[in-house]
Image: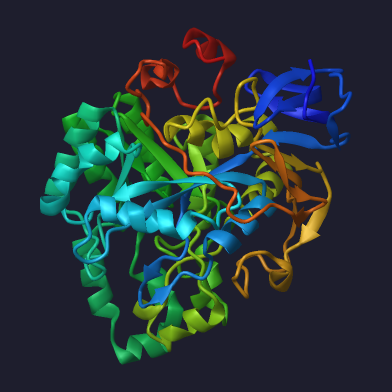
Length: 492
Ligand SMILES: [Zn+2]
């Protein structure tokens, strides 16, 4: 067999386990896995002494998003360059309708942001922000290849908020179509009350950015997750809790999954490596994101949830604002553009703090960063695993070599980093996207605009074709994904 490219001699992580050997690539696809593939006439990528991982899917990203009076500073060029350097080869952004927009118009708008700019592949979750107008447009979006929808339980001021009626109705449709609803779960009414009580010149002078965590106690997230889970349980519609940040949330998800509720939870890497002591810093306002990072006990509980299975995915919620944009707060925490840079450091943080510090195995990390998100978002088996027939999307990392995070040397447009000065292993020495090298020797070499939109036909635990039966909750937690289950489902 002849290959266009052969990745030689790495520790290759596959759904069936890791082996030291080669990945043969023909065109955009993985054509063979083996221990001594013939590289005659092929371009050889030397991976000796490195881990060869499936490319990372960051399924929670906001690029060039107008939000809180600013536009997030990473667009499809800088965002995908940053992602590539961190081994990301697929991202999912959120298409949000602006005033008066249909769902279709929102998606068209997001296509324009991405086309001709992205270095690697992408698609969008479709945000349902005005139920009465949008409810009859959901089916049409499924027909256009979008199978994940999003609702926000907060953000009335942005015109994005969904109420219980909208969530209930959307989940009914998700059940009917075999699609999935993503929910930002925070309890809006009590949150508004707590913010109003603290929004005084005296309090702001005294506490500054610390009012951000002070006005968002854990029950704000827990109550909202509980309520969303209730609607999922009542309707049977598939639910995905985005950016879960609390230990209470993990407990609720674990109990719901045990009852057979079709709910999946995602956390973001910042909730695994930071806690709210960052708000005591002089530059603490920079760390405002929504929801905010929580307490050390939440951090510990989320790692445990990844290990035991109730937390299925790690993403970033990338929404970059630079120092000048963050400075818009002028002492009022309710005016800080909320969000953090993330695409570039997802894999390095998960690898360094997860794998190197013994919290996850390498296989488990790949499940949470690649295989699970691909399956859950309806992109498997094209994405998410190193196996014959899949897109040749690979992240090649050195097991130990660390790089210090220096904001001025990064690809992101952020001029600061939550991880400034941290020494992290796991930056991609080489990133391959659909067979093309887009990062070489830690430098981005990929061509802007080569990324493609990814159409989908299903999402979540069930899918519409039955091929996702390995994901049924009745068969236990989602991760680690087992080869027997994949074989049983005919997809291994
Ligand atoms: Zn988000």
